[in-house]
Image (tube, rainbow, N blue to C red; front, side, top):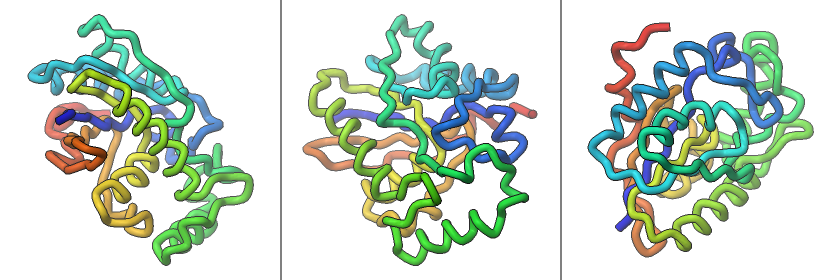
Length: 206
């Protein structure tokens, strides 16, 4: 049985300013994000991490770097694990486009998970590309303890499907920058061990 750790990247200045990043804004993590990265490394100390996976975006690479250096592991980077593409909404401040964002969320909550923002991706499209890559990694890996450093909305999309809630309930999956989701995987099935683990972040301040 594999033990998997799906982790949201550390904070960026865009996160702090409530700017929608998606796939097109390839921002670095900020000072708090770097401290979150070290806290993630320390939180995983009890586990024999043998493989590290990240998306194609630098905020995941930078967040997982302290762990990779400590364990002397190369980071495998896959664009299939990038954040959902929010299309024309990317780069905009949430409060300035709140009505548009809420319309997208209401479509998804109502079950229309094929709905996509203009020039963006739907949750179903995002799940398909990311789930395929995760399955490929798991089925081809001998390693038992694997870290996946990914993104917030992608975490909601993957976990909602894997744990049987359905994509329309992805808003119920809680997450924040630096949160750890520990899952087990056997015979193609995922089970939650501990979700949205954040106690390693408690003492950090922005």
